[in-house]
Amino acid sequence: MTTKTQEQQLGNVLEPQTETVIQIEGLRHQYGDRTALNGVSFSVKRAEIFGLLGPNGSGKTTMFRILSTLMLPGEGRATILGHDVASDPSGVRRQIGVVFQSRSIDVKLSAEENLIHVGHLYGITGAALKKRVAEMLARVSLTDRAKERAETFSGGMQRRLELAKGLLHCPQVLLLDEPTTGLDPGARRDLWQYLQVLRDQEGVSIIVTTHLMEEAEKCDRLAILSHGNLVGLGTPAQLKSEIGGDVILLDAQNPQQVAAAIQTRFGVEAAVLDDGRVRIEREAGHRFITDVVEAFPGEIDAVSVSKPTLEDVFIRRTGHRFWNEDAQGLERRAAGTTKKKH
Picture (cartoon, rainbow, N blue to C red):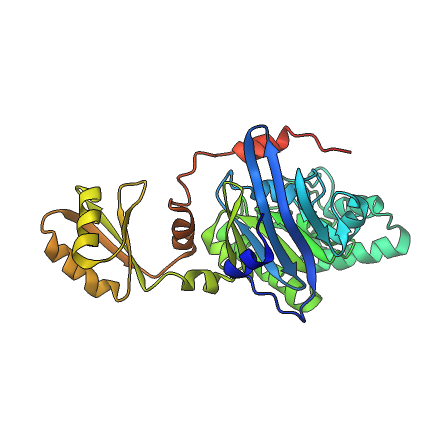
């Protein structure tokens, strides 16, 4: 189980005066013999965009399904605004808005009709519902398309309607599963700007699952998952700061031999990645590569130097690259075949 001390070691130092909205404690879940979550613990503060970053099969979809009350955890506890997702799912649902990766709007209904239908599910009727629908359509810039069927909307407009559905009942917590899937760059930018408005102007706490590094960079804090384990926790800047200096990648004819020779000659740790490249962390990398190339004439085919990224954090914490896990769709298939307990 990841203890509070372990959380702090991973980079999560909570401010005592800041309200914790979501608390995850030792969450575990299995699909048969496969561990989807392995004692994961973290917390989310009010008015915070919190990212769950990981490749397919990392556990983020399972975490999302547990938080949205679609399934129960095998072990551990998760609470949202004091409501336990296992023992008080109705209380949780009143506090959260959920936007799934797959489409949930009815494209044969108009934007207005979609929201009215959701309002009825939450027990909102009459003038209060009419007012709220108008507010939400204005908020997501769909007022002029209110009477039009959703099937006529672009992907970005449909995603905004999904957001309006999730926010209709004024939740304090918004859960989004891979929210920019299928959106063009402009629609992605608009979505993130809107999430920042929700955070800054309305104090909404937002959890976003993503496998995209550039989106993870936009989050206030991140939990990085790999094979069900929490391998990183903190702000993007905090996580990247653990990488000393620059990241150097070498394409070598004999990578294992070159890596060993670099360690012996320069006293620098060099790792061979799954794709055969040699990876080095080094201050002033642009100067160091000159020494390396001169030391191994004819053995190095290509060199790149870059500042640390979140993928570098993932590599350091796990020992392998972000996309080398042979788990494409495995977690989603397993989650989709697991029935929710009652």
